[in-house]
Image 1 (cartoon, one colour):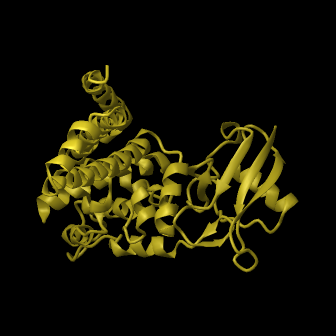
Image 2: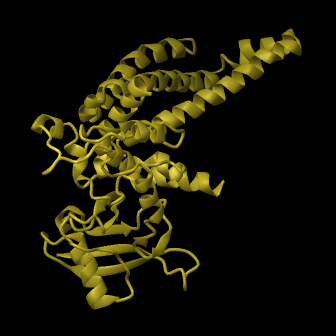
Image 3: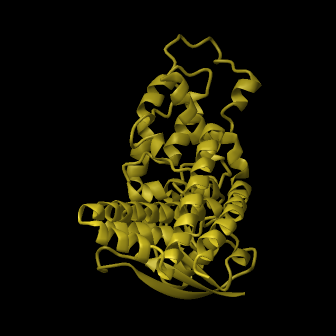
Length: 231
Length: 128
């Protein structure tokens, strides 16, 4: 089937502002948007720039706006995009080139929530044991692949890029509710800020955008309640 | 100003689901209510100028057909803003309900419309 790909192009060295490039691709209905982008890059216009690594929905490199909605290009099938497929870089991020955005501010927010196990006690000889029930408590938020689809779909983030964003809160949730961790209070204090969890307006765009089906707004809600109870 | 316009553009062009549109309507209704409150303060303040100006605004301008139609929008805005605010508060305190948020938005709209229709009829009845 033939599909027209409308791609938001921008080369900061040549272009004053972004423009739309149109390409016709011949694809199978079961091909993915990433395959169509590859076809353009490999056979039509080698200057098209995009980021992807595993191409199988695990690494989170190819998050972009596909037909007006955040998704991973490697997880959206061409049969679901219609005759014209519009692809843009993630919103509210500095465009490095074409579909590649500067992820550094996003990762800075990730680092800000101390996304690692904090436990000052001497580790046991083998490992820190945990019951299946205790592990289940934060299972959902372990699935995050840091693709930034949630954060850049959030209206609060569009309006204010100082907002820590859903992805960082999800990462904090993963450790706050881990019974082996002792850094919950510290993380809750970091998130109890005007640019922390309270900027969440419960819009649910993050839940829709998450390629891992994480219930992001529920995780943010649980962190909000934990702040009310613990601080 | 550019940042505000860009933010509005992103809001309108993003293809979100019920939660996204509920948020946009919440913002628009909030702005409408803020505009009305400003107008309300100005019109009440007219009493300081004199009974004639105050009387004209309240007895003539506010009962005119265009004002009544705007009043219907105001009723919808207030009802929606209140109902949607309640929905957000409920989901904030019971995050597990987020799983049903698309259904909850629809239920909320049905409740708003059920209250809005009789209120609109009563408001517009004076025109006929």
